[in-house]
Amino acid sequence: MHKKVAIFISGGGSNMVKLVDSMTGDHPARPVVVLANSADAGGLKHAADRGVATEVVDHRPFNGDRAAFEAALQATIAPYEADILCLAGFMRVLTADFVTPWAGRMLNIHPSLLPKYKGLHTHQRALDAGDTHAGCTVHEVTAALDDGPILGQVRVPILPSDTADDLAARVLVQEHILYPAVLRHFAAGQRTPLEFSE
Image (cartoon, rainbow, N blue to C red):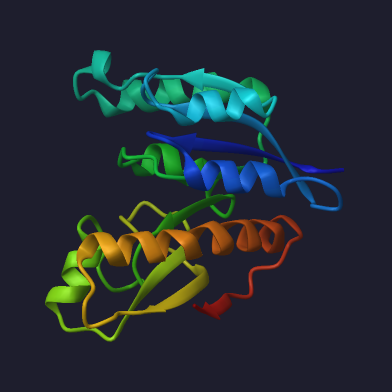
């Protein structure tokens, strides 16, 4: 029996596409729904083109009422009976009330070598600190921002000429490799962290 995977996005969904495309053949999971918090999210079309159900729960009409927004998220995906929830560029912070029922079943990808540089502007912060490496991390989601057990990381060398955009582009290539690898591992019941280098 395949694990059912729901994926949350906010934009173009490039990581979502890699996840969906990976879930074929002997993969232990299958995508059941892609949800966006805006009908304008480009990833919705990519999901639909791949035969995956799509849903939209726009956060804006909730006027900052996170509890109501999260209740709508949960009600929308409940019929799909997902076993695993993957955040793939979902740009809304989820509270403990939403996260706790998904404990041990919810993944996120973050563009830094956690625990370094939680939050935004990770690539510029790595450059400003004079780091020799940046990278990306897949982790289990907890109520704390960009926290939770690490399930996989890729280290990406920082080049002397790098701008934040240069670094972001190279890290994104590795995100597209890491997230599907971790999901396959995780869906098979494995939580030993995977580590790679560019």
